[in-house]
Length: 293
Image (cartoon, rainbow, N blue to C red; front, side, top):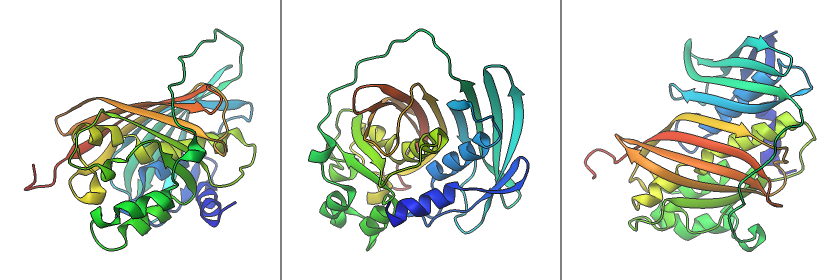
């Protein structure tokens, strides 16, 4: 296991303050706010620690309310909404400086047999044929604002082996493309068998690239090249089938719409052998900086 992954797992191992109250900390961020995927993953950890072991997370719905402060701890309060025979519902509020910064609702279910079908996995190149983040980002270092931005982004993603199937938005800024993006990802090391851990790792990664397809549609490179101001607004995930986050997962992303300063991304996450594991939808603020159209 890499040191970066070990640090991430330590972040997800929340401190239990009271029965339904937890405290988490943050890692350094490339931008001066807490990474949204971290807050979502920590909130899901908090929710998952209040349900019986025989129930697995099958969905989450979340809103990002305020920017998080990386220097301050985050307190997660869990409300046990319902515990039924098959499903359990939890509501989690993340609080900093006395104010809510994030809200999550999650549902957990016991396993049961039922109807079974899925869409066909889209074609994608083999992940081993694609450059790693550490290999890819230096190619575009001259496009980033400020010295060392590429290095900081590499560090921020070092817990995950994430590989773009095609040129990322910051690699083709100025040239509109089809609003679709694919990345392969996996944890940079072997994980324990706890299903909640794998779901939380996937939740963490899901906020990294989902709005890329919105940027591609408009030929924008994103915050890294200074032609977009953006932030996540809401996030939803449905976990369909078991998977391991330390094995290759294909994140197939597209954007059906952008309007009113918002862009919508939707995606499916597939195991390497073609099983549909997760569906994801996210909306975010996508604006040109002031003075730049």
